Image (cartoon, rainbow, N blue to C red; front, side, top):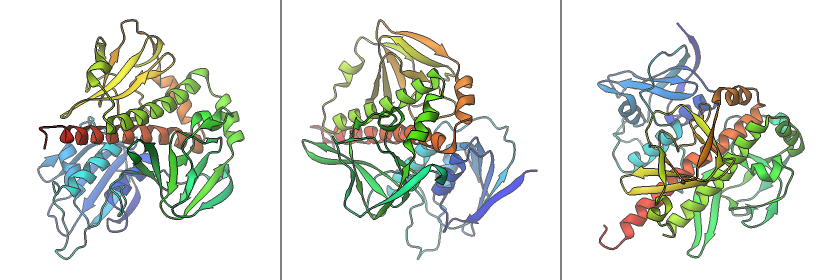
Length: 396
């Protein structure tokens, strides 16, 4: 038996929203879904907020979840209980949501509902855009010291501008945009609960150069966060956890820059990995975490459109399995290549995990936001690679 903690209707709260809600709360238990348009009961098992297995009719695992995203009407309930099933599903919840967005748009997932039902996306996208959208959990208002409103179409921050403020979006949606020689490039959208700012710009009490513009899609209400209070909490962390946060911040900038280069066809993949040694291969069951002492490491995803570079890592950067965060890269979704002079030191992820669990909700959400942005931007880079391959001579 378990504790019944959540119930509702899919027409009010979509499966994509449910996955994000259960993920942000690190929930463990069983989500049960019924629909008058389906004979079978659907169920998804969660462990620490991540789907580990699912079933509906004869389908199991990822196939079952994909099918359930087509249930546009139905009832759901979540029961908190211990889950002992093996981790059959290797994809993160954000990867699942974004992949299902694409498959629904491509007609690869059957939609269940009345014939006259108007198509409603159950995924974190926007009606006016196919850009992936990142939301966060409920805002912890104890860190909000002021509010600011930005009207639709106005810039919240400008690319190349200096700034040290950190905001959380209370209402509305914004787009992250990079300027390129080919014009503005929209990367993704952020909405309620998402953060605007970086580790270097507010945790280190330094003004940094904004690496992208952020523009309000509609009227956006921002919560100004108490950066000094957060800075004090940051400085009280262990050196190792501070280094991890800074490394994640650098990796997000890396994958963003590389995604833009892929879009502009400025990346030579062969040169990216030439002469590098495999440290471990994509999909390998690696449970270890490392920091770089000397040399370089390169993160590369193997896709049906070829290798997609995602990040270059340098001394003091981390790579490997971070059990309390999913960045959508190594080990399950990317390979690691190392330079000949690569020297690494193993890190105990359990120690970092315990410190992460003791963080304030705002700080924890901020770190999770960086991880989600890395994950989604990695997927955007792969989409850009697919489009680049299609545009090459001889490709259709």
